[in-house]
Image (cartoon, rainbow, N blue to C red; front, side, top):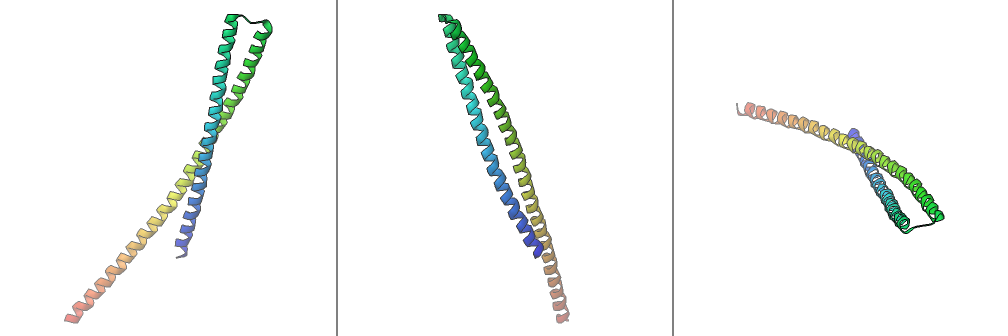
Length: 146
């Protein structure tokens, strides 16, 4: 009986670990989505700013205005590159958390399989005991009738 309760304890721990891993995975996915949204906003802002820059070029801008546009575009490009690194890191974390969740789920399932096997063994033993009792009863009944 102690083995059964030890397996139940292991299953409960594995279930808790799986639930915690799933929560961490969900948080990582949300964080990744947020970082991708920020990157998309930066890219959109850069496109809009570049369109204004091109419109300014077509309309004629001063050398200082041209330089300011260029400097700001460089700063945007730097921010975009930094945000892209953050997105890449967030995607890596999602992959790590997904792997951790899969490992925890696999462990939980394996403990469940152990419990199912143990129950099957117990059922077979019980079936054999019942069969033995029925055979003994039939033998006694046959001996009694003689």
